Length: 495
Image (cartoon, rainbow, N blue to C red; front, top):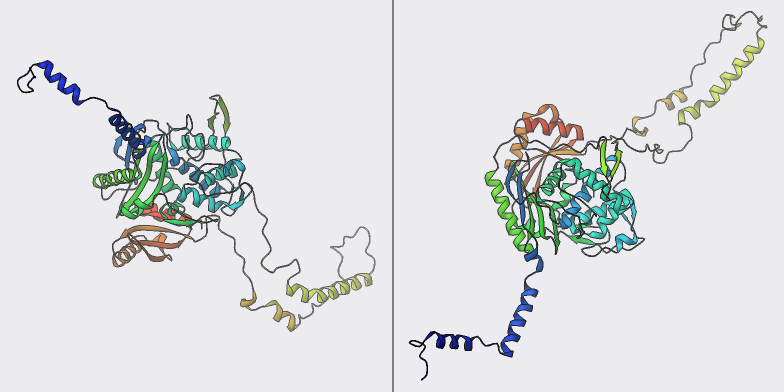
């Protein structure tokens, strides 16, 4: 009797189910192809990399959102934020200059992508290496920067860790300057957010690097790895992306809207598109939660005074004191076209001076001998010499026209009057000019004599005061921030 699927027993139903699930060779092959396809389509990092996030109000450092923010994870190329921070610090201290020609080592040239394509023995200016590391996220450029400043990767990693400790990055350990996966090379969303905030406030004159969609890196033009978010999110102006299989897709992003600025960090993104979308959500959350008006509290720069370091082996290191004084004093160069020859006025007077000396010697020999017990000072001159009238030609040469004189001034150690301040970005040129006028009237003491300038950006109009010294710009910002006016310093660009 044939079993009925509707009325038959349990055994009959099981027999039908087993028959439906038979593994034929063709079906097994389909399952195998599907499994391989999943590995191709879905990156391994999307499954393996843990997620962490952090959002802060950049003006005060207040935490607006946090998830797994203290979990130690692989930072990937977010590491280059510290490499660049130390490079800016070294330039400011006079350890190295932006125009220093750096010799690329074989170690730097052999770094895997992403890279600029440097060759061993090639010489390139530090400014181009900085651009490549900040915009292209080039590993070979980052390694060349570290070796140029500290001599080796290990020495630079030790400096990175000292700096991280001084900045309050308590759960970060660096092993290299580029961020490629290495055992023990770990950080957290909180620490990287802290580092991003210090980059913004400690070196505002270089911060514009992170918002460039592309830049000249010396050997070629390179595109920004973060250009999609910069183009898609209103007010975004940095900071750094990162990706490795172990880390996933990481990003520290900063955006400014009106008087507000927010920094958001994501670790462990599933893809670059997913990461950008998540960061955009976090930035939106930050702007919703951040107050409209708040007094900015800039973080303090690290001092490193009597800091106790730690070696890579874990043994206690020696006490290190890093001085911020300039290490060398360069001898002033001659003015352009100048020589060691005397000034024209002195040359013209040489003959008159020579004649005067000869006459004085003749008068001296004509005088009677002076007794030994009489000093020369007490002896009365035998003859009074009337000074000769200076020739008119000499007088005319002595008073040279002002146009022919060259005035050499001392170069300011704070960058001269090449600094400025930004008091916001506005939707129209009219609004920006109005704010500039109001701010100038509000802070006349420090802004007197500065140049008011509106700069058109893709996301609005920047209101800037230019032509200030660094000290004046810093003072003006602090006084304006005390009045709850948004302000940050704008310095001379590295390029």
